[in-house]
Image (cartoon, rainbow, N blue to C red; front, side):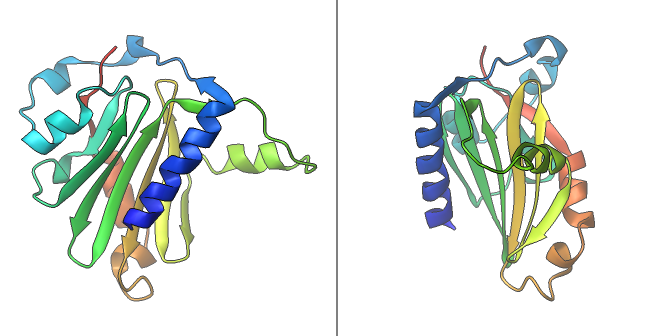
Length: 169
């Protein structure tokens, strides 16, 4: 899983070099909810420099098996569950242009937003909030028999339970 995260961030850095930063719309964000929550040290330190709204599944804020990779413009929080790995990431970077001969590429990219996708043992959803792109995914050790990965209800519950835990303007 760590290799996937490293590759993810290498790709982000490449995209950032050929793109820019999305503007965060802070006007619709209730920052009071993040101020009332006492965060574990790993989360507090891991997100202190992130310049976008940081969302976390409320059910896992106080888990012990959390790791964070972050920079000012992106973050990835990984939670090791019993026989599964949950990851949420947020990203302000964007690629200036997508070079492709396919006229259907843009339509395909836009059509997957907020849809739960199952592929290669991972169930995931990509979504857009406050001008920022996010991804939530679950990788199960036994994806063909683990109900968390055979049915999207588990990830939908987590998605619906996302709460703002930080981010600075």
